[in-house]
Image (cartoon, rainbow, N blue to C red; front, side):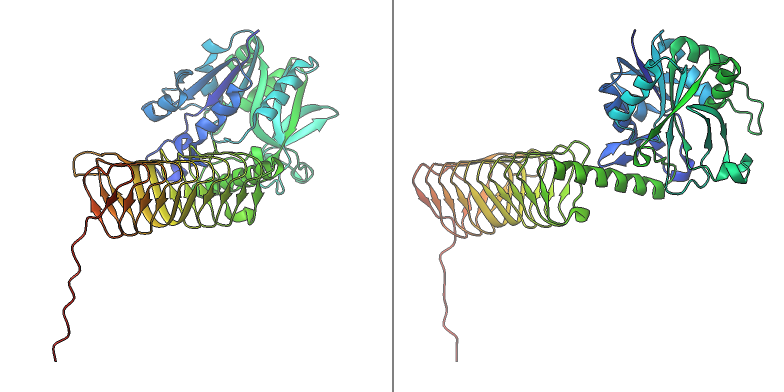
Length: 427
């Protein structure tokens, strides 16, 4: 039987004070909804996302998965019902997009607990350091007796540390039946998903609760909570990379994107930031205060300090990108060096080439971008401007301070600067 994940993402997130839907806000460079979808794709056969009306941004993020629209926001059970056409007969798990860090391991554990067969409904629980305003999970032996909201809890119940984290799983047939019987007889006249616990219990169905890691269950309803979730993600990512053989000299100062890939024996200095789309081979050194985004760095390369690699940059084996050097859509060949104060955009630099300090590729003419090609073992003198489109041949030498706007053949010396004029001081 197919397993299905339903992700409820219809909330407006008014406390975010943003024109963006709440689930579109980013953690580690990736929308909250995308985090959950990525985890669910590793576990479930089918995914459906419930969005509110006029949430085209979330529909785009959900693609290619199914989307259901909750035209009226009448509560979480009502939201889940909008997707019941996708339930099927197999296990159905419901998650909330504003709990974006639930891992694929926890999702698998949720389904595994349901598959044991002794409980017809399984909830995600957590044990936070401060139970605060969370709903308490009142257990009776191995099973859940009831959920008690903080406002309704007595002193003994408030002392319980096991709390409701939001997600749950049941067979599709049961989930469909229980949702249909949820009423809105409450102060807000809303249909609450958690009400199916009492419905299942009234039928004599056992309800289990899985104690998930607290840092996976953080809810995001405000900018402050978004920052807390970001911190939790980064802490997990740092631990994961160090466990995989990456050295972080000052872990708390390094920030990763959700899709960052780094090979073992890479050393990362303090205050390094990885944007989306970065792949680092093993045995790379990234020095302090460097920023990388949308780039590939191959083994043996040294980056930084204070280097910036923008989208489309590729740094070859044993190449050097030094302080205050910026690469954009540029490929630096094996062993090539650009060690200081340089901009290389829309460029291909051959193996062994040396780029002097202050060199820039003038890649934009006001209308279009053009490419610069620098051959193997070419030497570009300091403070040179290469006006694209232009090609510098293998082994060519460009004199310092030159402006080059014509192709230079292999092995040639090119100078493009005014003759020095020295006038003696008048007395």
